[in-house]
Length: 262
Image (cartoon, rainbow, N blue to C red; front, side, top):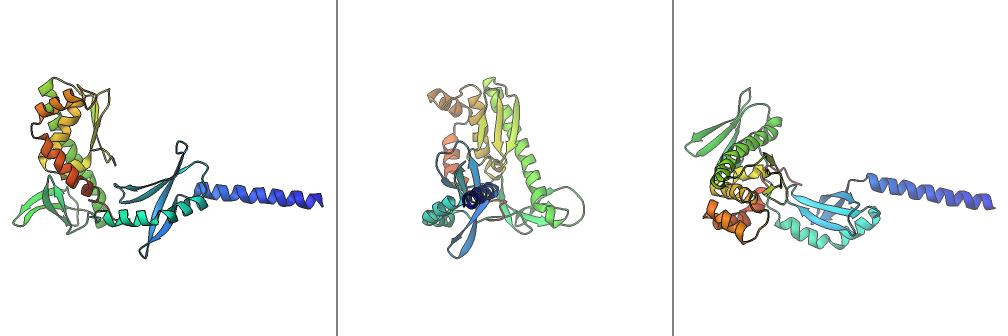
């Protein structure tokens, strides 16, 4: 019965296309790690030649990148094979430190307590006997967003001052200053003079923020990391080695601040 065979083949092709469409629509997988369910976001990349499982420091969890033609079945098998690696990396992640009433976080390197108060008003910093407190008015549900916006504004102000001072020292100019939340770099500089920084630098001691400002300003004159570049950094910030050492030790933990968890 040729017709029956043809229909079977056609149905099989339809099923395969449906499964492939479901694979493309899926944006995450789940994996059991030490008795808990871990969500693993899935990202497809036309450039990827192999599956890549990595830890996303900013999100505080894993991410799986798949080549365009990979199936979810292959991805699940890949996750199962690397579950030991995933468990060890998750165990090493800094504990999430969400923005919430009563919690503390470093502000310019000093422990600061979050105090939520109802009603309207602007966020303000107060000095108390037990240390600085950041008063955040408004609805509790909006506290993380409001505090995050405030910190970005503070970071912009401090970096604008530091960048302007260093640029004036070497007679350089920059075209724009941007504040973001880059996952792998604290700062960057384009050939057009656009300087970008992580808002999380406002969490660090002032000498660390100042070093990053000096580092990116130095790139306005030297778009490399050669000897001349580091001589210029040393001219702008003679103590820059201490700041680099601080970031190497404490930098990874900054990505846990403001994070609610996986």
